[in-house]
Length: 240
Image (cartoon, rainbow, N blue to C red; front, side, top):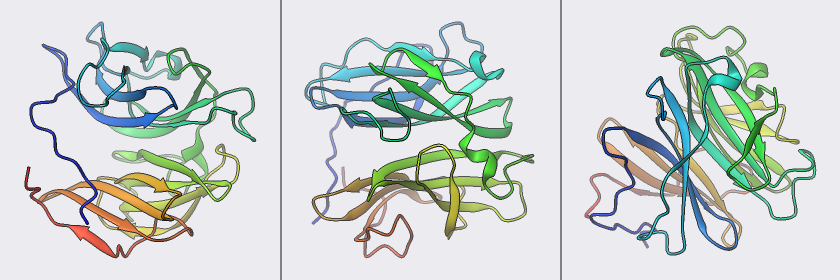
């Protein structure tokens, strides 16, 4: 059965700006959306947030929560956000984690970790989880970015993109503590990373990814991590 829902004429955007690359989750009370968009001062990319009780209509006014300034960068983008009401066993003292790209211009992307108690006030940790990954220490071209991470089986697992290293594509990653990540395999040669989620009720890893032909959907019934092949695929274009 297709597991996506198409809703027409529902759009989160700000007049005169641009907004993209969302990360959406439920915190037990409301739906929270985080995304990348033009900063309030127009100087680069920033992270924005909004909340909704129904995830379709009635989203709150967008609030800018993070800019590139704490990272010494012009841009901060591509948020991957995780929430745990009881806090995290390794990143102690915080309920919210957010992995973001930061860069000056379009080159040399790296990934940083920010933390929060309320999802609005964010504190950069100084940790750059992408640094230990192959080809990411001195990134050439685009570099390494677009982390998409889920917490499953007592570990942080997900994907990232590397571009400009000579071995480009989407790669699976794994971490025991959410701070130091290891590359656990190559997914494929696409350089637009999937949005990755884990469904504990089924044991499926769920993927949404933009490809050259549109937006693809798929899931992999695996608790070993987000590696292909997928056992179910919804080819584009969606009938919506």
